[in-house]
Figure 1 (cartoon, rainbow, N blue to C red):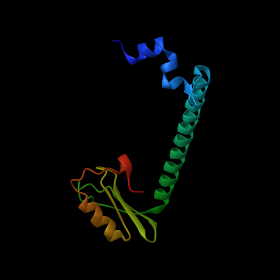
Figure 2: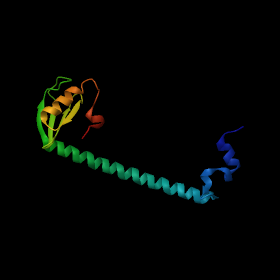
Figure 3: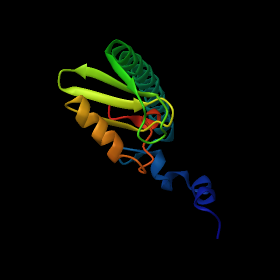
Length: 129
């Protein structure tokens, strides 16, 4: 016995991909699939553009919000940037090892960063901001 694809080549009317509203119509089914594929590609492109815009906005906000650079509790390098994004949102990110933490105060963000030691968190892979 052959593969399903061979079966559907011999009996295209049995292929569920060729049915439109329960009726065998391979041309219309192909048009619908092409249209859906085109729409999915347009959505992917739009999402990629939005992700670039979001990333740029976050980078600009962080550049404006740098509060202090300190020693990192994980790697020991003086590369732990603390950002005051708003009055109630502080973010710590080490530019060396990538560890990060957030909090409503500078001290809380530092504590959460220290608590993350050994969790292999890296803000470059996806921060909480």
